Length: 310
Image 1 (cartoon, rainbow, N blue to C red):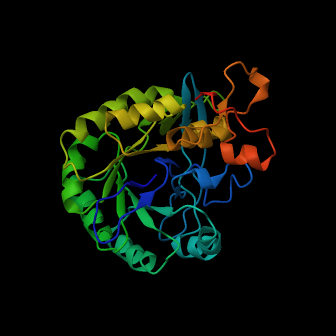
Image 2 (cartoon, rainbow, N blue to C red):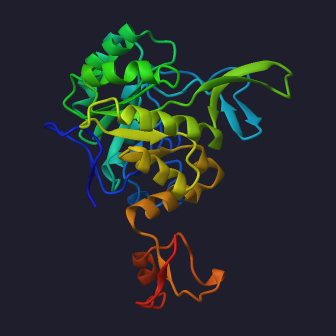
Image 3 (cartoon, rainbow, N blue to C red):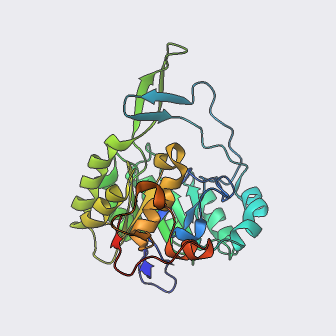
C-alpha cells in the first residue's frame, strides 16, 4: 500500500499505512522502543521542537477529567540542533519516515530551522505547529517561511482558528493540513485547589474535529491532503476520519492509556490484522499478531477458510 499524504510536488511524502502518532506522543523515537512495532506505522511524528531550548511548564501539568485529561507541559525540548544531534542516527535506522514537529515562533527562527532541516536527510518532512494566539497575518508569515524548504510541509492548525486559517494556509504553501491541535481549556486542580489551563485530550473531542475534517474537505483544494487528529481511541475512530475525507490520522492519548492501541489501529487500516478460525476461542489468537509474526513464532498456519476479525 502506498499513500501520498502531501501534495504531489517535487518532493512528496508517501507512507505504507495511514496511521501515525501525533506530536508529543512517542518522543523522538526512543520512548516506546520494544513496545510498539514501528514498522507497522506510516511515519513517526516527533515531539514538538523549537530552535532554542524550552523548559517544562511550572505548576500543575496534568488534571484528570471525566472523559479525558488536561495537559500543560510547556513543550520542553533541548532545542533543534541538540535534537538532531542526539537522534539523527536513531531516525536513520527507523523503518518509517520521520516527520519533525517544529513549533512556529518567529519568522526568523522558522527560516533558520528550515535551512537546517533541509540538510538533514533523516527527516522526511516537517510539521509546523501554529499556536492558538497567532493572528492570521502572523500565521501565514510563518507558513510562507517554512514553505521555502525543499521538504514537504505539513501544517497543524489551531483548533479555534481552524476554519479561518485553512484556506489561507493552503494558499501560503502548506502541502498538507493536520486537523487539529487539541483545544485549550481550564479545569480545577484538586490538589492545589487552583484553576489551571492546558490542552484537552480524550474521546469527546473527536466529534468536533471530525466535523471540521468533513466540512473543510469540501472547502479547500482537492489536491491538499487532510490528516485527522483528535480523540482517536479505536480502529473505527480512525476509519471515521478516513470516511470524512482525511487521507491519514494521528493518534495521541490512546497510546498512553493502551500502548499497543496505536499499532492495532495501524494494523487495521494497513490490512495487517491476523485471521483466525471462526470457532477459535478468545485465548487462541492474538489480535496484535499479524500473519508474518505468526509464522515467525511457529504458530500453525491459519486455515484458508478462516474469517477475518478486526
